Image (cartoon, rainbow, N blue to C red; front, side, top):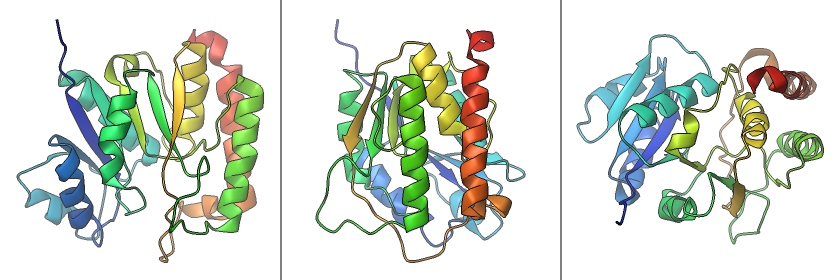
Length: 237
């Protein structure tokens, strides 16, 4: 019996009024089922989403964080009969044309994670040096502590086999959530592969929010989250 893949593309969104319409139009070209998790936008994004009839929307009344938005996407995929979930950012830094490739690779892995550092693409951007340095330091630490061989531990462009999503017990609500996810994925024995994706950074300023905009503070928070997730893995299992 051939099982047809039913895929969902999910976009966590917070104040993306300048990008959301174009990005959604592009995503819909490659995946007909699209979910937007509006994480408390206050800039007009919500009004744009409400006017569309070609997407599903889950709305957080208040901004809860990137990790919380992803968890809402996980829950939606689990409860609506999807086989594959693709997560893609809504800021124009990911290329929707790669969605089918990520979906196809879930035939060989539980988590297919984009990597901006696995291969050079023509037209790649130069990332902000501090962001790249922090990514490298945390990725090295993830690999050392978990026995992985990742090159990019923070890329939001991923594909998941939906049945595995119900096995996670994620508590991190912010940008550090992927670190908790990696720890639990290894504990669950999941197969993880990376696929190269272009490195695109926009000229506009991007905020992590509050104290996390300070690089050393952000690095410390990431290290603490990773250590806490590793320490708590016995309880998780």
